[in-house]
Image (cartoon, rainbow, N blue to C red; front, top):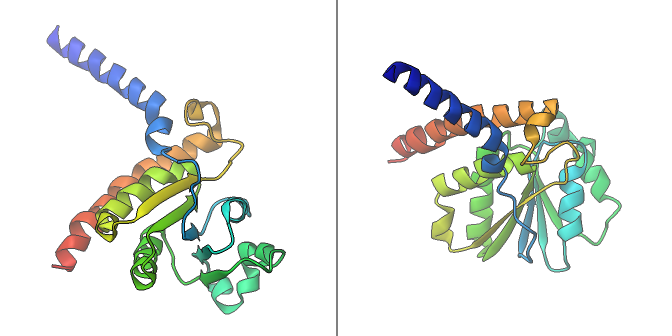
Length: 196
């Protein structure tokens, strides 16, 4: 009888975890005024750059990160840069050589330190925001004494409360579920050992 109870309890926990996974992953915040806005690479075409532009204010610096071998050779092949051409008054920097979220955050940390920024907004997809926060904690962003604002894009297929109703959202959620422990091991445990 106890084995049946353990299995039943485990099954219930698994169901609760599945139903609440979207709420765990999506910790996106409302945009606030910050000195630096970062548009991470990836995502659906132009959604991240559109969100970044929508919260841009004069005086901000917009940092666009991530790219491919093609965008390194020709930045105009990056949809975000060609889209940004419509906004000549936006001051931005572009680093297409960064290949993943961790590399982007390490680079962002250096930009923050070198420019003495006190506030930064990172724009990505909503389901990606928990991993950004975890990596920022692993890379000691708190020591920078900055206000970190993680803002999510407006994906029409993502709803954190009912993500499980949309096939694309389920795939995104479970991909993040795999990437979070991988990133924690690679950039938490192994990264700390390498840099001791």
